[in-house]
Image 1 (cartoon, each protein chain N blue to C red):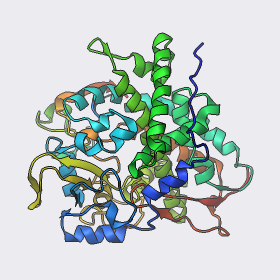
Image 2: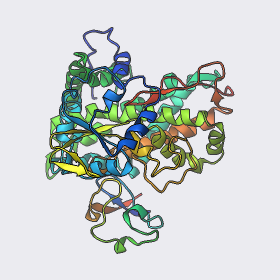
Image 3: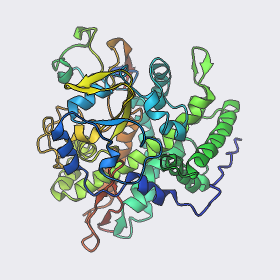
Image 4: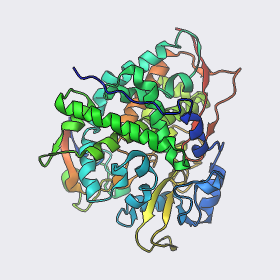
Length: 54
Length: 417
């Protein structure tokens, strides 16, 4: 399974969970997350995420 | 064939760093009433965290201007503003002396550059594979020594050893050198209380890792050190001082904290038999139990940052040059975020992330490995020690310390296997 992962800390974005504390509702597709959103664990930019095989 | 270099013991072989370490971590049975009291005073209190709980002087930081930042949101603010609250100055006088030039003692852009290289070796999909190949054999071997007895001290016989042995396996350390390794890994931290064995341990570990790196570059294997010794970034290998410092820190950051975290997890469950039963019967609760243990009694109660410019938090001024005790334990017990925060409750709402691994750019590199290790350890204990319970003839576990907390003993009984 491939998922978007923060390359600075390893946090994985789960679409069904979203990131409610960061203003991203559950179910939000990766493409629909704003570019200024930050990794909830380490604060890295969306551009620091890569698609990884989990 | 690679010949493992010899790790030299401390000159004073009778020196016991494990006993001396207790001086710096303290024996405070419960810092939380005081933490709640401090939190009620506001987000910033202009005192040192350590001075709340011990009179043992901090020879490295005691003379410096300090304040405490308390509460979930305020702690988060410090950890996620690295341009204001810096690591380099905060850790150069302490961990920098113990470990050297580690990523903990760096700020951006240097930190960003090296952090990604190290994190790549500890991403979730990488460490998940170590669960079966590295962690399980260590866990099983340790448990074999007491599983037939029907009783054990899970701290002395299990948790105090397994995370360190996982690291030894990853770096393919000669097992007979393990006791000296463990001793030096702890001793290197004692620079904080002025013990000469601190710098001595730092130097001896550095010489050992330096020689090991030379060998692993000449004849690489499949182990973690071979990987880190040969990985290239922009056509260059990691500098020796950065890599040696990282390996020194790995022993403590990866060993000492997971040992304490697992000890607290088991203590929490064993003192709440209903929750132990629930997690034993439904293993989907294991991640909840781990999160709750790390929230309830996070192994590291407070960490430092250095305030680089005049700023404020919730209207409380913090002057440039102040060393900020960022009290993670207050964030994890903040009643505004966690209902009945002093209760151990694996069923609690998980909408707020725990702060045991900190947050921001310096969030723990090894958090995914720690979770794998704790998961494997807990599942093995639940599988192999049926009818597990506290030993009624021994003292109940008591979690102690104001900075690095854990129970010194966890005497249990179970049905012998």
